[in-house]
Image (cartoon, rainbow, N blue to C red; front, side, top):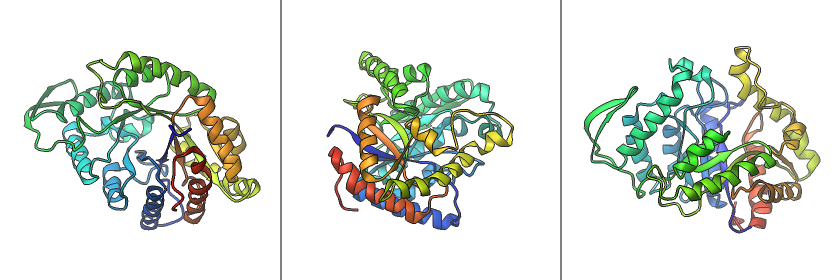
Length: 348
């Protein structure tokens, strides 16, 4: 399985540490990931919730760039309806040069109507706003002057003084959860990231590969430089010396993760059935991989064999896991799991 790769997905959840300690600890994890040859670090964007203590991905990533040398970095995703495209074009170009061409760009409209409402973005309009903003951003990355006339965004003859380092632009990513999203990503040649059980992802990846191949010459293609798209899925991971130790630590931590990701939905009295507080249920659905290195290695192998993915986005810091627990979990994963797939060095 030498053609597979490992990345990190991060919500940057609140925990007992101060914010300064949280950020410092995450930089240590990023340095470990960089030394262990993880391919990429993908940062979520959330607002007004303990799920996301990095509501400005660009700010956090500009610091992460300074603590790493090789790992690729980017948002997954920028919530485009919350940005003016002109501002975001400049931030993307800055980050691409500051990272020496290591930027990856995830984009989306956002899944939480509550977070959008706090910014006075009507959820029913956010899809159209997202598509318009994406068109304006991708156009602006390639032009010397930008004129755009849309329903939500307009500009006239704006000088584009900044351009990305990567040619023609940093790779774009999209979160896929249904057939419409799948088609949107494949038509534009975007890398895809998904979630859920391996069996369901298998259907998505099979359809995506076919549609992606059919759209290689599509003028909408945002990643013409990409020869093989990355097809990934999110997984919460915790590794300890034994299965029993891992489950004892991860079980209450997973309940805290659930409380964080569901907080706004529960605050507004909305039933949300995509997530579970029960670690064993999450394991049965393939979304949590918890145990000794040998057990997690087996589950990773099953993931690649049954999902059709060539990329896995793992989370090491979630819920109430401490910094020390997350560091130990990443160390075991990088030195005793990843090498079995030909994807890492053992220097952590």
